[in-house]
Length: 353
Image (cartoon, rainbow, N blue to C red; front, side):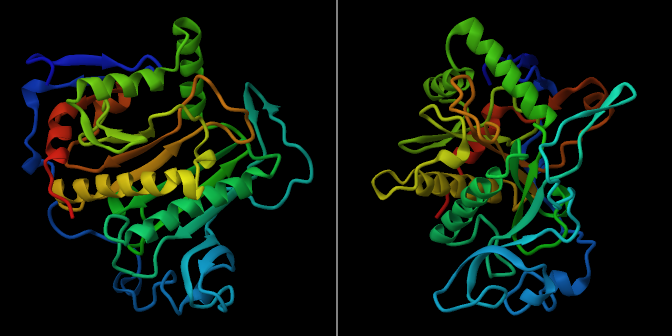
């Protein structure tokens, strides 16, 4: 750590405050996953005998929206590698509204029609695989599907924001073990994203530079919180980590919209990003004994020109035994019992293959 004393650290863009509690810092052994996962779905979903995401059970899901599959195979049959279907219990209404949506007054509140898209990305044919264990090319294919689906739904003029996320394990909100991620497209910009965009714009106006670019440069110089680097991407435990082993991955060069990442053979940044992200997941898997986690993207809103003040990033938040209790929920200040400096050191020293 940079200090032997407890520190209150504030992020000037998000406004979040964390308390790095050196006096109650936990050892990594106290934060690792123990015991088996307590799945609440049907047993045949857990063991894979009737898993709707497994090969041969394609008729157990809604019709596929998009897939990467072997030549000569047909939609909704075997032969796929990555497959996208509509969520059986969508959070939004996917019926086309037929007009541009606008917020309406409802007493002192504002209401927008709950239109949007909610898709499940089935990431692999292997029921027991995870994003940390799939092949390198398979991992890239999943990320390429996230990019393709973002571009597809963003073509709808009512879509203001596309949110990509993966819940791994029941504690993280996964409904069943077969590896999958989700995409939700909304007609509004989510509150956390809107606040981050506003904070980043204010920082840019005051400092004439992108906060995220400055953060990356500073972290690379400081080195203490770096987890892994490649030529064009950096992974680090943020200075203001809310929870133990939180990792952010971002491009070094300024870019505000994830779906604009280059896939061209001469500059295939997507492959490089996928490789670094999988390495981080492998490190987390080793250090914390395959913990449940949430992974998600913060990117610029859909159909916007390049933003000079915003920088897309991927965030991974493992679920540990650290408790988010009344103080955190009530105050918004998170007590982190494992400093990002200690966490980054643990992850860097993990031996991956």
